[in-house]
Image (cartoon, rainbow over all chains, first blue to last red; front, side, top):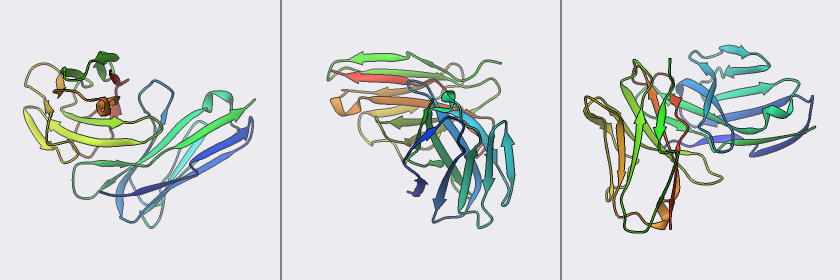
Length: 111
Length: 113
């Protein structure tokens, strides 16, 4: 199956700091999604990207669809304690039915 | 507009028993996907179904696991003769059309004793 490399694996940051994480693939994707998962819950969609170069914001979150279509980035500005959780990227190829998920970035925000 | 519903949220089974997990997609969504998540790991695709059809089951073990999405009612993921290694969180997602954004349910946490 497709491999999505998500980094960093985990982050420990101070409240108020900005956060950056990214997802890379060896294949070209036509859709990138970013999800957040809280403990004991299902993933919640944060941002969906459909076009190379697209930059989309959702509050303090900003995500970009890389120009090469092989990567995507998620930034969180001015982090707050409720940003704690695991962030997953997911990509969809031009062919096939699956979304492929990254291994997740675990974010801890220290008040 | 209710989101994706899954039940039960928690399921405990003894080895050898059957587990039946149910998923009701969002209203208007006819595409359902099942994923498995082990602790500290990402989501692994299992199966993709459209009403009454299995479209892609490439991620589902060949034995003991089956899935259906009947014309009426929820999608069912069935695990027969469960073993301890089946313990995991099972998530269902739905989308209005193939390849479109998937919305996840809260998951069913299966524990096999």
